[in-house]
Length: 347
Ligand code: NAD
Image 1 (cartoon, helix red, strand yellow):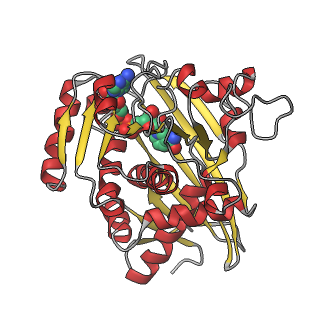
Image 2 (cartoon, rainbow, N blue to C red; image 1 turned 180 degrees about the vertical axis):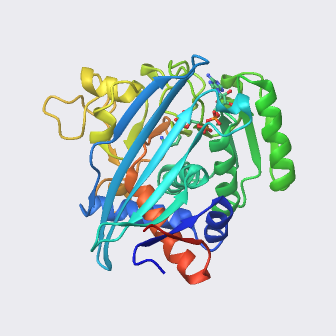
């Protein structure tokens, strides 16, 4: 056997490992490590282009490190996407997750990352709902019915088994119908219905998750009733007034959010319309808008958890590499335990 080798995990091998894990617990653990100041998130590599169909395409390289008491974890997710991939019958996003050897720095595991990436994102939503969602809720709305919507339902049934009502909306009637058929087959306990408009879908339940590919904000504040929660996962759906009128706004990493003015909350932070906690001259809570802080800070009790009551609460997760690194590390350890994966000699 070559001295230099790594393990490769295909999608089926990744699924076998995820079956033995609780990704929601993994995400919550990473968020606590983050709030304790024991993580590193270097600047992302971002390469956008337009493909020959004129569709937005991009590669994102996301390095991250966790400095856990048990030892450090280093890794990366390469996640590429072309928005017209679903029209070719393939998922919009796909890529590879890596784990690095802390001593030699060599990659020691590579895994197919499309589903893993969707699961890590859905796991963050589940943690945010546990910590910041309504005290009681029995239905969820998904705006956008692609790969991320499926991953959210996959985790919902384990994290919130009492929630059975799912209302969806997608600009593509076909994609919405495909999701309903998929859910009927995989999660028959869920009652999934399609709403005629996004606003109608939002009004139907107290929890909304945006999972679209919209780059132009279009959702107004009006449909978000007092007592509701919105996870703005796709980052380009909520208009300015939704942030300014919220009871509370939380992020995952405020530097990452502010550094990206292509996304609405990043641009509001850069323009000073929304401020970070502790900013001199920041608007008082309730008048204007200050971000409360991060979900990790809530989990560690560093800042209060404001659940929706008099108004709605917004969660705006930019998407952190450390969540990918935490999950691929857990998958790696599980793969070693199960003996799954293909060893590849490099030299
Ligand atoms: P996808 O292409 O599989 O599905 C997106 C769906 O949204 C499509 O069915 C499309 O028809 C629909 N859509 C587009 N605009 C819409 C609109 N205005 N109203 C209703 N539906 C609309 O994409 P996906 O892989 O499921 O990803 C969804 C989004 O999640 C992407 O924008 C992606 O960038 C984002 N994402 C965010 C994070 C994060 O951590 N914040 C992580 C991963 C993905």
